[in-house]
Each structure stands twice: as C-alpha cells, then as structure tokens.
Image 1 (cartoon, rainbow, N blue to C red):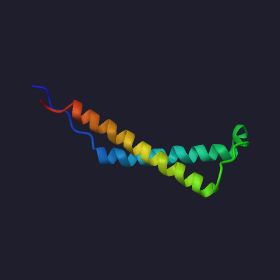
Image 2 (image 1 turned 30 degrees about the vertical axis):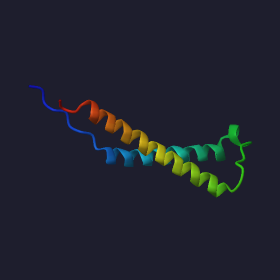
Image 3 (image 1 turned 90 degrees about the horizontal axis):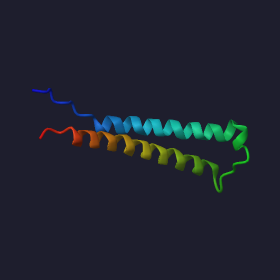
Length: 80
C-alpha cells in the first residue's frame, strides 16, 4: 500500500509568498532608483504612497499564489 503524501502548510507558504512578494517589490523599486533604463520613470502622485501600494500588492499576490498552490496540491493529493 502506498504511503500517504503529507499535506503542505498553506499558512506557512502564504507567509513565505508574502515575504517573496515584498522582496520582489523592493527589487523593482531599487531598479527604478538605480537602473539607467528606468531613470525616466516618475510615478504620479506621492512617491511614498506609490511604493507602499506596490509593496502591499506584491505581498498579497505572493501570499495568495503560494497559498493557492498549496491548497490545490493538497486537494489533488487527498485520499479517496
């Protein structure tokens, strides 16, 4: 009889996804600041608000992506 597969921790993966999303958002802002190709880029409105919204959006998207992957994997590998 095959050994049952262990379940992935969706909450833990959501945490890692949020951190990964924040890292990607910070890397994008670093590129806007220091890459010559993006020096012409100027966001409309307040710069702090722009950066904060992007960091939060990337964090939420990363958390949702990895938690969704864990939930789908757990659903597909459930015992029948």
